[in-house]
Image (cartoon, rainbow, N blue to C red; front, side, top):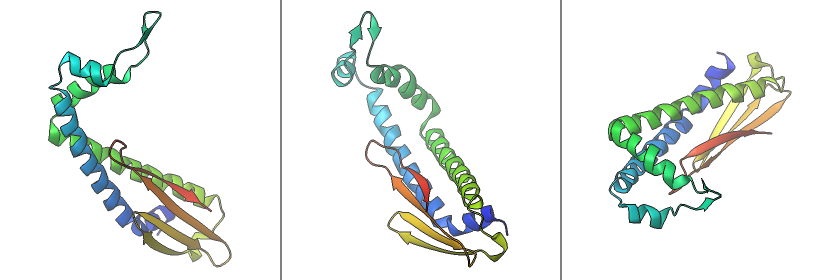
Length: 157
């Protein structure tokens, strides 16, 4: 078993939890966008007032939502919108495992003698990897909230 396979096996719960959090967020985000699609010009101006300086728009967040993001979500439909968010979460997980494996390999552990102990701490996980001589601690920091999409990164010590 190579290091990537070991890490995937040890982080199955992280993957499931991260994907579930992402799907929940995507559903709420889609519903919010569909409400925004009904807004009048006055409501858009109230929430995202356009500010200009020398003829250039300074506040582009509202314009981007109004003309790009909300219509795109509406065209995609709820199922496709959520599926895309899920696929992005899976890709993030796969890429983070590859990066983590690369960082661990740089520590010079003997993969043939590798022992891994993983524990869940709330929404985060911690893995202790040792070959008997060297020990590496890899752990996640997961964040997200009402207006922030779930995301995480690995830290290594």
